[in-house]
Length: 250
Image (cartoon, rainbow, N blue to C red):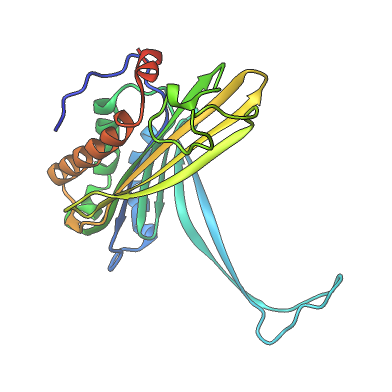
């Protein structure tokens, strides 16, 4: 594992950790036993409703008309928010997601916040089968000039031999899907730039790293898994940026 210096001004605007688990013998409302504990950090709860409608043999004519059917409504997920809504915990039938949109304070702070939140649920989660884990980091940069993308990034799609854009840029983006050799880890990377106003460009570098390895949930395993995902995320990030980007972040 490479030892890199932390960035003084990290460009992270969203940091996310998600685990998918085998929901056999676990019901969604089982998690409500932790409601009081969760509300110490996430005092706002929203229950998302899923509704299915069966129209039977009814057809839907054109125009305004009355139709008959049967609806099946149920809770699809519980979403807990902090007061400022900058942190969020979403619990659904087979997925738990921790999202942090606060100013990024570094990996150790994010990892500790994630683990501390998930361990509240440990009575249910301990020794369940986790079927996938992932981290997602959305990085955002602001540029006054973006005539030559190669000044900032190494992974590009170029339309000219000298990498200069032939016309003023309004929007540009592409998506990469990469497998990490000899592992169950893969990554989805989205890069997008948009000219939001005169001489102002917003560049989004979105890295999602996912591990399909099945494992049993416990504190130590979770920590090791998060470090593995982070190492892949860092390889993708640092191998794609130039010295100019490093200077912007320091």
